[in-house]
Length: 172
Image (cartoon, rainbow, N blue to C red):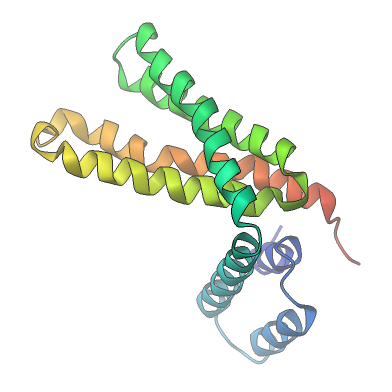
């Protein structure tokens, strides 16, 4: 799948109004770059998700709560398997994918928006946690853990993308 096709698919999945997608397509055909299109689609998708979340505040709070209730016990229990970076990364990936899946099953009409809320919340919470423990994490051995800590919440978006794509098949 080409980047252009993927980006326009994201507009479809996030319920961005059709006229905007048409305008972006016209601009792309008139010579705008792929980077320009990527930036415009990212802005449109973020705005659509923000509107979806703003219109469903209680469901957003519930999605964050469900995500935390699922991911925290799984992510912390991976310490029982060992202290290696591999187990840490795999445990957190599993925790966030499972949390994203359960959020999507619970809020299927707004799967992508609710999993995005959880990803943003988890990312901000983990960043704050790292900032409060900065003096302990200065050594080089902690860098892989910091990297994985900040990236693994993105795994919760994968089920949201999958569920949303399944609900909105390609328009021909």
